[in-house]
Length: 357
Length: 209
Image (cartoon, rainbow over all chains, first blue to last red; front, side, top):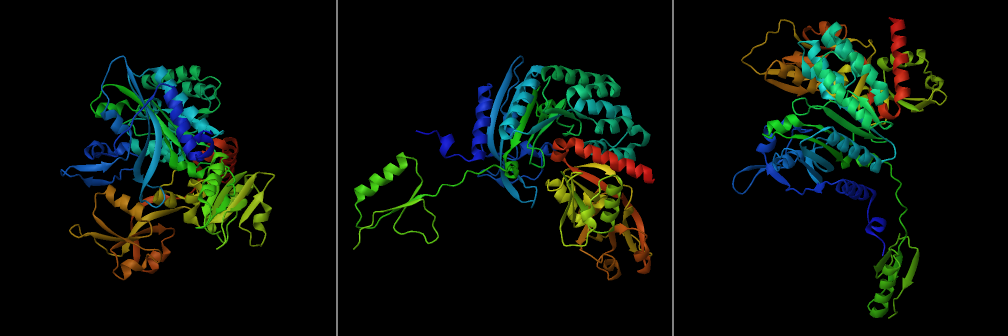
């Protein structure tokens, strides 16, 4: 018998199962969660969500509930701090968010992993490596862009008083002229940072020149440690325009792109600050793959095979009809069982078991 | 091949001039015909004209790798794109204008007519002011004259239209000029080509100034 993978799954479904199998084989256990959470869980930390619009409703006891707009919160809620240990969880869930185009709520399939606990450089490597492999499953041509918020924050603190949100927005847009308008001559180092893009080997010497304080040095040490682990990986690039909210994320943050999809299909990072806000002392690093973006990919669809038309009427021999049907199923031939042919139907063959009146 | 979205009109023509002077010429774009897309396969560029407010959409969705858009469009639609260069032309300002002698009454909700709903909302939110936005698609200057709104938020180039209609700019919201924007994914997969083009444009603009 053929496996489901060969006969029944669409490309999108194959990706979902391949990702799940990748995460499970790396020791991540699957986490299944409820569709609803108490709204309170999101209300206080709305900035962490990609979009702060949440579908809410009141449950049977009058409690304000939300249709899950995010998975990370639900997983953190169920975690306990265990020094010296790391909890590895993967998921494949629908979340409910505002769509990019028409600003209507939509259901989005999301896969991902969360690595929560006593996080060290190895764990960061493990998550980045899985992010890279996830992109590889989706497409042959991909790029994983990595940034370090510690380095960015170090440079911003050296600039002095400024509108941090506006500065981060410009860095995220690679907008060197915008930084100039905001900071004048003080913008020089940040402007150089926006122009940096490339492999670890190419970028690290430039970062060394930009290092101005301890925060930058610590971040650079972490980048160098990853550079050793990811030596000769062409698909990984350093790009400091990968910006996530500094209120929740710290350290390494990253985004994954595949050719043909106009924006990031994978997004992740280290979010110890969110853990702290939710009363946990552990560290955490995660990523999510957004399946709604797969629509942009130009997969070659397998040509639909024309079915065999199996015609019968009330006088047909039912035993023969069942035998023909079973033969087609066992030979894995697509068929349609009808009493009459469709006018515009395209069939590979017609088996007529009708008996004239 | 780099796909380039240019805004129809004066701004786009000026931008094309800079692209061509920077070495990215395209003879077919100057021919008088009904073609929609113009290619120079040798140089690896493909130009097309689109409505100015659509440039950001073409670039954000990856139909164009890069494009030229006014800062007003970028502020209004907040597309998820890189903003690589300020062309420095197409300069104007987004301003609040009102009938001459207008005085703001803090006890009344301010009625604001504009095409740029998000820019106006963000501007007045930053001032913690409660406003009533009236979205119009054209002839914005008519609104305060006919009493439809107290003020307007619109692009002011020379201010002549305002003056002729007894209106005056009272506050500047933001300075506007043409920007080079790039699709985030294209920037990764066509990095060398886009970087080379941005550098050539920047060098050409430096030469002109």
